[in-house]
Length: 346
Ligand code: AMP
Ligand code: MG
Image (cartoon, rainbow, N blue to C red; front, side, top):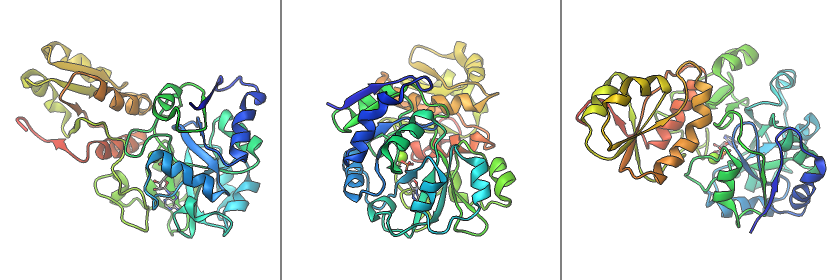
């Protein structure tokens, strides 16, 4: 059994986190909340401790971790050439991870042997306090078994990692629900590696021109060494998931489909099709078309729900690839293994 610590995400006592900080200091693993998703962390300067993360998650060793910091002092301890510091001061704490040249003290387990390191200062009081009390940066990927959707609630982390992680901090739901944006600052112009809550417009307003390779949308895969790890299947439910490329096909599809199926859609689309369905159809409402942050928040829990329902497979609507919509579509493409429906019958 893991030690489970339940705290309020804002009104918690630092003492509540002491056992978690002690665990980090003694080379153990701690699952903790951030504003994006939950992370599974260990002391970023302890290679052996970080190796435990790979074992617990069944993660491929060439897939590097993100180093979570709570101060610029810690940034200098992991990154060799800190460029654009004035700009980083404007974006942190926040859901943006940057790639910088690494210092030799950062163990190979963290960076998968690369000469760069991914760093982020999370905007979650529990995460920042945990790093402070641990007195070390914390390396962490998402707190799921590799290949599954990232956990966005303490309940899901407990289901996934109880008995595997040494400590689990449950602070309820995360805020954004999708993983941080990753931008490579060692490239000129800075290059987007993973879309996330920090949008391209926001990136451009801070860093100027940003390179957005087509792979960043999830339509095709990155190869080493641009972004190791992104080639792996991610976020996937066990049942088949199909992306509906054209949402205008939804009414016809819902009316004619005769297999047990779940449709994942917005409130607005649900209102359009709910009366057309027979009892072989289950609807999962993701949020509202007018605020795609609601969809981002519910996405991973909804993908997990598919496997618990009595359905053969699931169909998810598509979203405009603007703002947070770019991150949503990237995750959906990966979760579906790029299976899609273009027309009916498919
Ligand atoms: P996760 O937090 O589970 O999404 O995992 C962290 C992700 O950050 C990995 O999958 C990598 O793709 C990315 N990452 C970490 N370090 C680097 C790096 N040095 N260069 C490029 N991408 C990185
Ligand atoms: Mg992950």
